[in-house]
Length: 182
Image 1 (cartoon, rainbow, N blue to C red):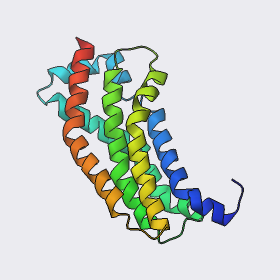
Image 2 (cartoon, rainbow, N blue to C red; image 1 turned 120 degrees about the horizontal axis):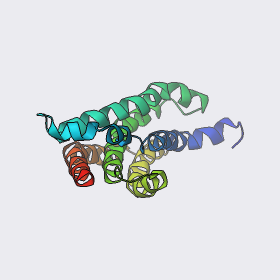
Image 3 (tube, one colour; image 1 turned 60 degrees about the vertical axis):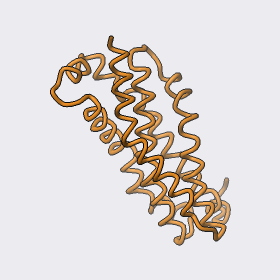
């Protein structure tokens, strides 16, 4: 891309979204794998706490270790990429809504493949089609703000996806873990 400020500003939102997506995808294979190998998942199933809650906490920790540092660094990275300051609040709102959604969708995929060995590429192949709409709406909200359009529509869709995923993703991932361990 070079160092042209205008070129960097045009792609800054999309580049930051792809960086967040790849950061979450790299650690997705190990989300439940260590717990499955040492027997912790079996203990989770025997715990008096519902398995969906434990999966939700594990997913929150995945988000906190992969996406939250990038959210904190986003203003600095946006400045380095010459993102106009008027677009930064839209980018931050899109990342705040989209990154938990990516982690929740990734938890479902990781739970589906927890019983398989060396499933790294399979996790990526299953997760990327689910990640593309989040990426489109997240980067699209920043692109809409750059064109002077109202970015609220894509942000509302991200919020709706997050609300649905907060309820359903831990339950689906818990069911997938139960199936994988039986």
